[in-house]
Length: 115
Image 1: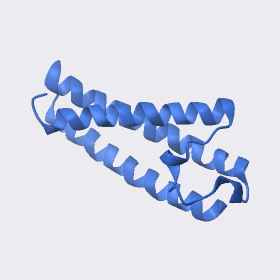
Image 2 (image 1 turned 45 degrees about the vertical axis):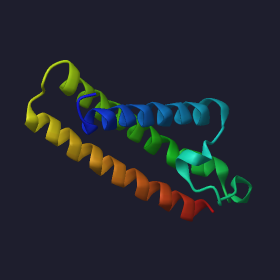
Image 3 (image 1 turned 120 degrees about the horizontal axis):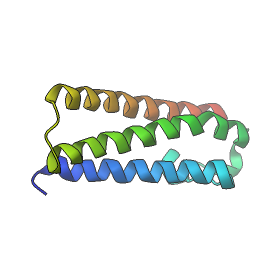
Image 4 (image 1 turned 60 degrees about the vertical axis):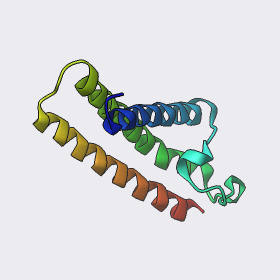
């Protein structure tokens, strides 16, 4: 790896893939990966409306997962395949930062709303 950004791009791709995996488990098997969405001290058994929470958070998980994989993948392409236009890369970085902040706020709001 040539710099810290390449390492971070690998982390972003991994986080995005894991989020998509957690989304898939929630949609297909009904399982919630608690470590992805909330702190360990929150008990799933105390949720007021678990199905409502799943419906609330699932699309947000999908957006975050796709955004993380896209941004990390774009960074890896930029580092190892071909340099991308800096404007495109910077716009994608800004968009991913917005998605990251939005997801964190929505996850916290969901926890407050359903617990």
